[in-house]
Image 1 (cartoon, helix red, strand yellow):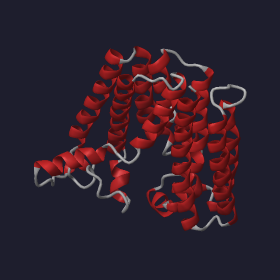
Image 2 (image 1 turned 135 degrees about the horizontal axis):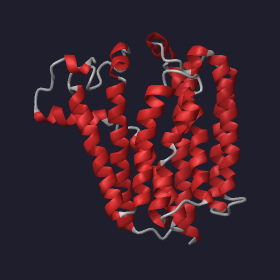
Image 3 (image 1 turned 180 degrees about the vertical axis):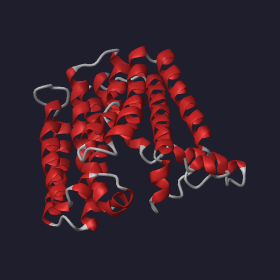
Image 4 (image 1 turned 135 degrees about the vertical axis):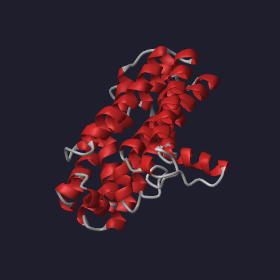
Length: 302
């Protein structure tokens, strides 16, 4: 293990805090929280309890931070080999592997305890299932092997809205699973666009992401197909589920058209990394604004 063989290089307590904070990959977490909140607003018909919202989002934050910390431990050798990730806390020697494992475990226990005590057991178990799937199935098994790894692995990132729905209702309805599936379908075009941007890094360390194994042309075709399916599927929350109305329809239509335009442009220029970067950034914006549309729709309708 890379991290355990290097003495820590933090110079002061502030840097120690910063290093552990970086282990959680904090830039990833806000999008997970937005999907959780959107699900909670639909489940509560816009009449959400603010304390429940805060506690659920805090529990979700801790669960996501735990999963990302364990991911950093497992991927430390790959991170050391890739120039882009070599300065992360473990490969750079700022955090030891065993300390990171303890930190990740503490975050997971705090998440489960918070949700189980203040929310309900189902939401706590769902949050733990997300950690388990990400750490025990996606990271060690799916990521290094099949080219369709991110398709199956997308289930981990789609669990937060289930946690949010369960927090409000104590169960899971068809609408909850629809949001889960929407994020599941959105994940491949989102992540493969990133993979196209950094394909050289993945190839260098032998991670069989789709563009490494099948090439850019095949990847952009897959991105186009999944984007089309995602946009079409986004409307099931209006019909046949009748969970949302005209405001969400407007958001889904405008955002979906632009998402398809981005995917089509990338399909015409599969080797253009700037186009892949544009697609990646828009995919984040798409999901954030779509969830914003969900919140606005539920608030104004109720």
